[in-house]
Length: 102
Image 1 (spheres, rainbow, N blue to C red):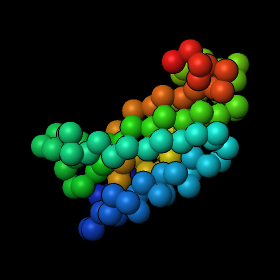
Image 2: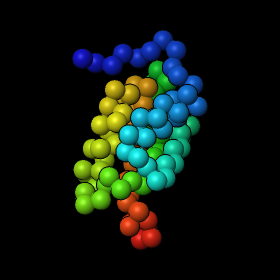
Image 3: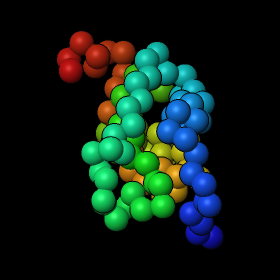
Image 4: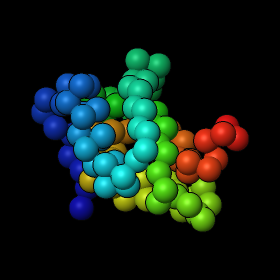
C-alpha cells in the first residue's frame, strides 16, 4: 500500500500537533519539534507539500537502547505519516541520563 499525496496538505501547525500527539506514546519528558520545510524548498521530497521536521525527544523508554532502536521507536509512532505528509524526520532521541552529556 502506498501513501497518496493529499489534495490539500495539512497546515504546518496542524501537522506539528499531530506529530506531537503521536510521539506522546513514548511518554517524553521533553519534546521539541521544528518544521524545517522552508530549508528544503525545491527538494524533490517537498513536492506536493510534504514537510521536513526535526525532533528532539527525551524519554525513559530509550534507556538501554542504541540509536537505531530509539529511532525505530520514533518511526513506529509516525509510520503512516511518511512519506506524506511528512517526507523527512531528523531525530535526536535521548534519555534523561544522556541529557547532561549532550
